Amino acid sequence: MKAIMQLQQQVDEWIKQHGVRYFNELTNMAILTEEVGEVARIMARRYGEQSEKESDKGKDLGEELADVLFVLTAIANQTGTDLQAAWEKKMKKRTERDHQRHQNNYKLK
Image 1: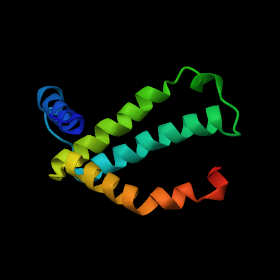
Image 2: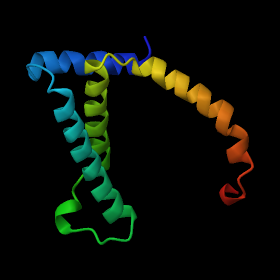
Image 3: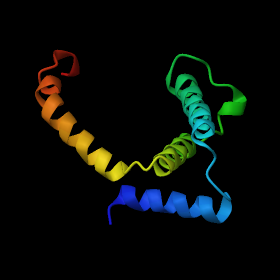
Image 4: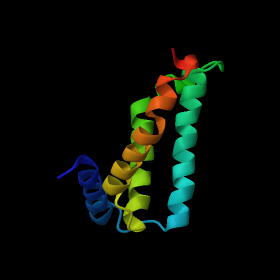
């Protein structure tokens, strides 16, 4: 079984065992936005030009990215989206479309 399919199953099982049920799609979209905001805060303060507050120094970027992945996966599950198939389709498209474009981009040299 492929990793993304396993992830979707794991999130579904967790929600059914611990979360009672899925939040509705719009609630999950709002939660996803919150989680992306937490990632943005870490990135702006740790890697960007904003100073990092003392209260932010203990935040784990990996955990925040995992929160984004969890909610994104939940949204895929509840909307019947096969992320594995979508990922494979997108990577094929990116490879065909972008290989030469990025190879020839003088800004990336």
